[in-house]
Length: 115
Image (tube, rainbow, N blue to C red; front, side, top):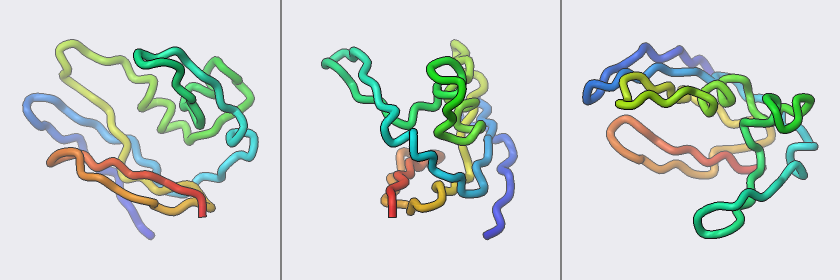
């Protein structure tokens, strides 16, 4: 499968740049048990496959490709002038695209599920 990097695009005055994840990455077995909880607005929220692993929680464990951590760790500008999104995206090896949902004219959410 050949994919290309998407050029930046402007929508509603906001520039979106893209970080590609164009090849399947390998799932790390320790990531399946590296689950923790965080207090949320409704109660405790279980968090797994956190992009923050590799930065500070456990610097030896990387569950997602570097592009995902860069996307997650981006600085949010107010007002939003530039945002970074992931795309195109390929699910990790041993996973398949379990579903997708169109969010709006420029965004689609993809769920990767184990085979």
